[in-house]
Length: 283
Ligand code: DGL
Image (cartoon, rainbow, N blue to C red):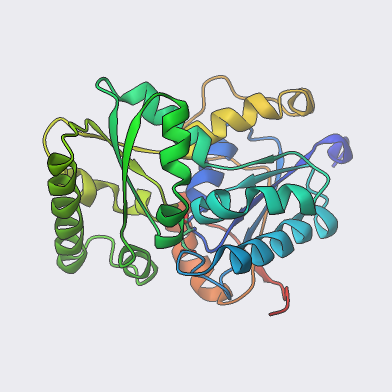
């Protein structure tokens, strides 16, 4: 394609295919960019692992996108890697790197009237308190809760299943009671994990009235357009993103289960992911 070499490649990384929800928001804003998405499905979940292991896995993945795919910018579309390994990723690659935690906190700031917000995420993200500090920087009070059963339920495709609805209800009841016991009056719930947007309607049914549910995908994509703004003069940024997805160039890579990625990935992306290529990043 003439001029294709001038068009930058944006690398998007997640531990699995949940980050395709962020890719979708990016593609809708920058439909002419080239995208390379890597899901480290062989080593998922990151959310139950230590900072050291997450940092090593995430740095390998980032290097694959930059060295092998020529990515000029990276979006870490994984809350756990953004919370625990953003510095390690920035040290591992010579390109700008954007995580999803700060955009998520900024979206919470825009949504919350009273300033008290709830965050649900993986164990590792919650233990890092990355959302609590990003929210504090936005003058918000955040109460975080780990919901470790939700990722496997989404991975199983049980997004609209009574068991999942019940698990969500139990988690949110516990969180709401905890907030009340701490004297908080939350009006916003942040989906602090890339898998949770797939459960959005079940979560919206379970939150107390008046609580808005937000995820970081749109906020992260807006932040990407701002951060990559100078590079973006080589990409036509769509000022009015469309709901239907057009992507001129997308390559998807996974470290395991290519068939499952192709099958479930389209749910996250909102259109077929195409042929997914298998890569080996080692152990
Ligand atoms: N991608 C991870 C996140 O957003 C969820 C899946 C995992 O635990 O690896 O936190």
